[in-house]
Image (cartoon, rainbow, N blue to C red; front, side):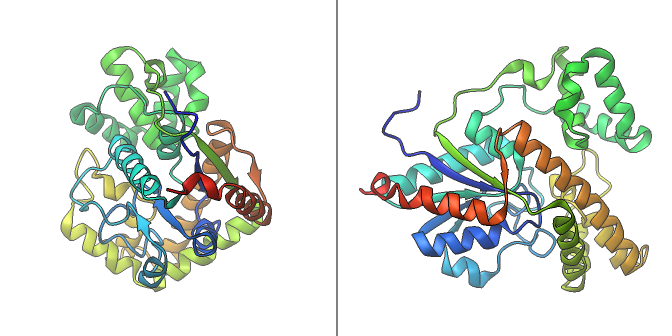
Length: 311
């Protein structure tokens, strides 16, 4: 049970390429914050360009936690992240320091703010089978299988391939879906600040950033990843589930041209950003503010609560 005296954790979130890292850095410097990253792929050492990880200079100016904490050969999941994020937050609060959780991985944030799911741990064999089916039959076939037995679960999928695979993995083993198992109580209360630029502006930024990252060495980074972990393995290694790496690898190998790779990545990223916007509203229950409104709201919230972090 949450203690009434425990400070609420502020959480800043937005779709990919919306500018949340820049805003978090700005507020961290203004208020002396430590940033706790809520990103499923910046946890990996070596995935720097394709994940748009903050620069070394930015990380030197402001403490960033839970980046570069795993090798690409490891699997890193939501349970591991929540345990680490809660521990970091507790340590910072005990020292009188001020944490700000920032990131766009919705299921990480949901588990932190609403409690960790109690569904069974993943079964690699079942997951490998479903990932093969996803490649062979397509996402719509998996969603149709879910709809046939539990149509109430379909909105939770939000056309997210990873979520559909996970849902069917649990269902085939237990006859239930992950949501049926409930959640353990969260360790901390949270105040979520979510924002997004207008969709046309966000999509334009995605296109610009994709081209910039490809020109900055993303194909070479994807080639390095392929030398560490096979992109053909089943179940698919977690690091290869990051958006754009397979297309960047295809560009490195001459299988796609630069325009083709940029268009494929931009299209997939735009679709992901739309799913993120929906998730933030429906699953986190956070209204999507304009960027300036989110900056003002979070700044005011932080300014009103300095005493909560005093040791």
